[in-house]
Length: 348
Image (tube, rainbow, N blue to C red):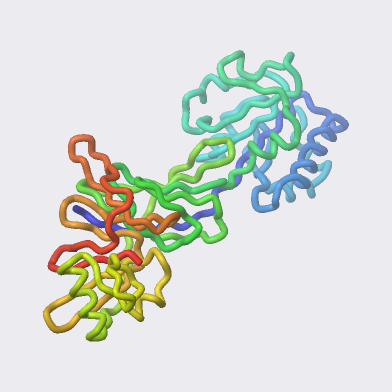
């Protein structure tokens, strides 16, 4: 089994672009578009404001800068021809693009099925207007909130997955576990390290998922596995208790009753939070333990012990080479179990 760790940092996505059709526009009619932009400025958080330009133009401005230029900017761009090429050439890799048009776009056919229009929305003010002669979907202006949503590039959640792999740990509590990956809907903390185990090469992908459901892939970077904590020595009486666990599968407590292995009789374990894994190294005369920061321990037989965060139960997942998937073998496994090299694991 291969174990690999990767790091991911949430990046700021480039702003969406908004192109305004000024071919039939007069200065008084430009007031309608200006009011629309002012509405966007009031509706959208500043961090999501789009860049704005004119269809056929070669320059884009941040939303606020566009509005501050006032009538001189509009005057210079009135009656601009409806050609998309100059704008797309001037903004490589445009990402999300919204065009508000008032008539047919002359060279649209040249750009259909290109990466530049992979995420385009054509918008118009009524059904009588035709922008693409039916070659692309067109929508009548739906209102300020819907326009703002289409221009908002910020993700609503992040998903990190890897085919044929299982997650064994991560270091950001905003993420939750799934067999093939982790997901977060709380994006206040931008960084996370995540570890996977697989019988195949591990190639994870992060996806920034927006409210509309579309996803933007982001590459992860390989990183070092978290350093394990130091080995600590068990007291002699604790060593004896764990020896009972190994020999008989339990221990006799001070109450004279037999108990299944847990962290109760070990003083140092009582200081650790529930759901923590502990590695144990036991020989005839001494014992040591090592708390583990990850939610999983890799076993010998193509399987992984997972600490279920919701109920603190121990689950065992095994790799099926025929289907190349991980399947749950046990939903409530004994919390004390053997590891490779004569070591043992305990889920507190």
